[in-house]
Structure formats: C-alpha cells, structure tokens
Image (cartoon, rainbow, N blue to C red; front, side):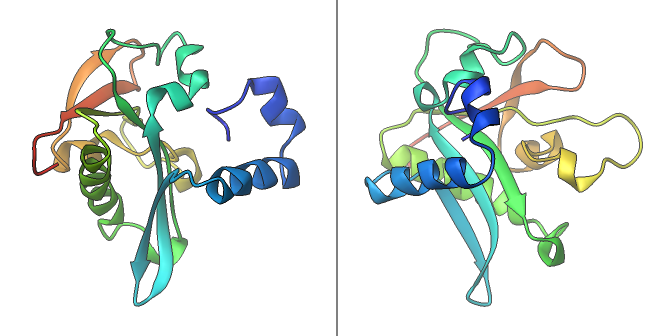
Length: 159
C-alpha cells in the first residue's frame, strides 16, 4: 500500500489496516502482483499495476513520470530468505512483462536501486536492483538521483 495511498495514511495504517486494505483490493478482483512458487510454496512476490494505481510515484520528484506515455509500474519485490540470490527477481520481471502485456500494457517501468560498491542489506532492496532489471531486458530511461535509475521495457507481442 506504500505507493497506493498518501504517505500519512500509509503511516497511520501500518500493520493490520494496510493489510486489510490490500486484501480488499484482491477481494474486489484486482490482480496487484505476481507470486513465484518454488516446489509448490510461495517464495517471492512482485507488485505491479498501471502507474495511475500508484499516486505516490507521481508525488516523488525522483520517480515523477518521465513522459506522458502510459506505463505499468513495478513498485516492489519480496523474496523469502531461503530463495534469495537464485534469480527469482529476474524471473518475476520477465513474467511481469508478459502479465502487463496481456492486460494491454505497452511499457513496463521499474525504479530499482543501484547500490554503491559493496553489499546492500537485502531489506533495502525492496524496489529491486538495477542489474536484475538489465538481465530481464529493461534499459535506463532517466536518472534523477545517483543510485535510482528509472528503467523501462517496451512490451512487444511476446511480452
């Protein structure tokens, strides 16, 4: 819900309130993301939707729209600890492209981090890392902050 509601509302709703709001989206028929399974068990998550579903992106000077073209946005990831560093993020990005294309999307956009030299704690990589986006066929289209590129993938008939 971080990008879906005003920041103050998100902060007030941390925990149960935001979880209920998210469940309500799903119960209402929304498909707010993808789940990756490993051996039949959920292992990773990728949130994506048309950019207009994420008003918080437009309020960010760093993540403001690049142009007026309609895009789908990937807003966050979660990969369970036992499944990290196994390529699940790249797989989710590739499937996200197919998912958005099947729903009429033509451009898929993400807002990964590009860490400085050295390791970054996993908890800070919730919007993804730029190298995963590159491996999944995205390219940088804007950069308003040193460590935060805006990356896009043009979706063709195969995603």
